[in-house]
Image (cartoon, rainbow, N blue to C red):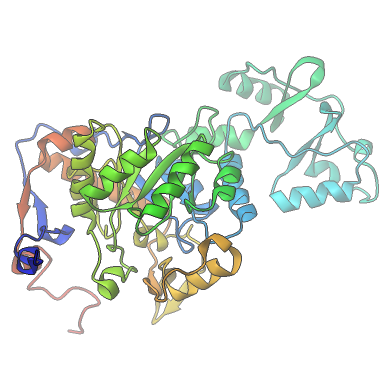
Length: 485
């Protein structure tokens, strides 16, 4: 039977992008300041803001993940590093703040003061519980060691009469104890003074400063890690330190990838995000392959600002289109509760609003967060303006780094699918997140929706022509920096 090539064209799907639509205003009784942007990303993870940073080596390491989680979002640690480095990044996030630190750095009474100083400097901490056979025998602070003989033993300068707390201590009780005794570190001990954890004044203050932070059941900041479905060793190692694993594959709808992911979810217990996907068929096959172990789906193929997949290969599924395809597949399977993460091409709060209105629960952004203070890489000054480096994980530079250290990432394609360059410096994550959250809330207000779920129900789309898209931008005016007057 001859192949009907003509029908392939005339029956082609409309692969819409963010530029093709606007949200139509609706009758509203919702004021922007009353909008709730919280969302349940998985059964065990709730975010107070639907913002996730991309697992890219110029976007998310521990500093970005900490800053974003404090605002209520989530950072995904990239995998363009050794397993040990990725674990250390995740540990830094978990240690950044917690009511009770469980993974406590300690020192022994017979260790040298020089050893204690080295440990303090390495991990940027100001004090160490002193333990012997897991039992607390003292505490050592920088004030104890600043002018001490480095060759002396810790026991010579440590404080032996330590103020402690019991395992069931509340935040308010801890604050009272620390204030009464004028201490900044409060060890938590069990029977026979066995050390169980540590409360610091810094962590208590941090909880008050960031009341809407995304935290786990122990009060630690939430964090995710990117993994290749083929790298089971990395997944099994890093899962102990993170709240979810995120598949980092450009084309998840591949038989080998699906089989590898199926094995991975069977041998790990943490939440798993599949992706990237962009079609109804891909969603169906992923649901079947993962058999109930699917926590969320990452939507979008080829839409990122530094991704040239669609240009080089002419293959892609724009993020807005991908979200609707995946939503349809989940509805078919009766799995509407599985969240969708819109990934790629989001440049503004308006784009994020469109993605959420189309069925996404959260948006993943690389370009936006790459320009923040907390992203990896220093500031670059060009012509009196500041920029930060940004590159796609499919760029030559990122590929070469990954291939050099990870045997699970040897090149299967002979061509780069990403570019590298710089993006304008945006300032601190907090400033950027507040701007995006305010923009989102305004969009929700226009749609008459007070939450993401309500937006799914009430949002109406309007199509925009290419000429109309230009009209929706500022026009007929010379903007500062565009042209000399």
